[in-house]
Image (tube, rainbow, N blue to C red):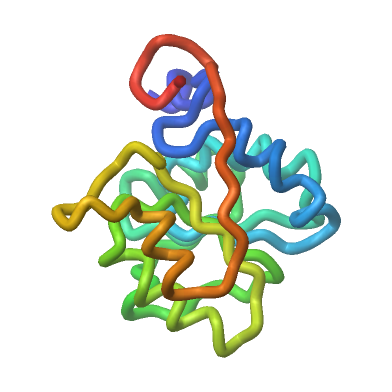
Amino acid sequence: MSNFIETLKCPYRSPHVVVEAIQDIIKDKVVCELGCGYGDLFPSFMKYAKEVKGLEFNKERVAVCKEKGLSVIHGDWTKDPIPKADVYYFWAENTSQVEPLIDLLIPQEKTIIAAADASYKEEDEVSTLEHCKQKWTGELSRFPFDEGDEYREN
């Protein structure tokens, strides 16, 4: 299984283009991906960041990350301490994930990068990122990408 994960041209949740777009923000900084899955974005982050860490609640995924030699700990950011970092990155599936995380990180004055599929709509038809921008005064950027024809590759 880990061989397949290592060779994904487009990670399941976040496209590589997101990391390319934020390279100036993460350059020479400690980056922590919250909900890092199998660590499939780590190689992209490592091109620019000083250090990359991850927090993942799924023990199987953490085991795969450990097999790859990645710095990932098992935990749930809603309950457990999060690793110290300069920049926090996460892929938001919905606003119920975004708001508590932003509330947790804003007082620490950390850089937060919340990525999401802009086509995802909540029941109230407000996109996750638009909702995020209402909650927090960050910038909203859109990055078109085409990494193939499969799920989340375009």
